[in-house]
Image (cartoon, rainbow, N blue to C red; front, side):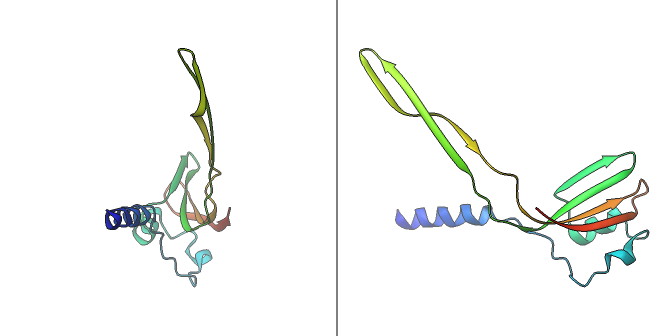
Length: 122
């Protein structure tokens, strides 16, 4: 039973680990402006974690490194059953901050060519 619990914990921990693109730190992104396409970025980096499209083009973010994530939960409850009154855990609220980490932000024009880039730290 103990081994099953440990195995389950390891599987859950492994499932929570997402892979992030391996981006060569020596890439000269400025030299890619105007010629590097969105399709090339997807082929090189994988599917982006976030994409926003507008008439001005497309902006995409790839998570390079996740920061630590914390959440806070609080629950309070109250019940009445016949002559008995009880207080305990009931309805709760959970608050999670937005994900922190390092992102690669690439912006593309309507034809799909890179117009700007930046590494963003949240």
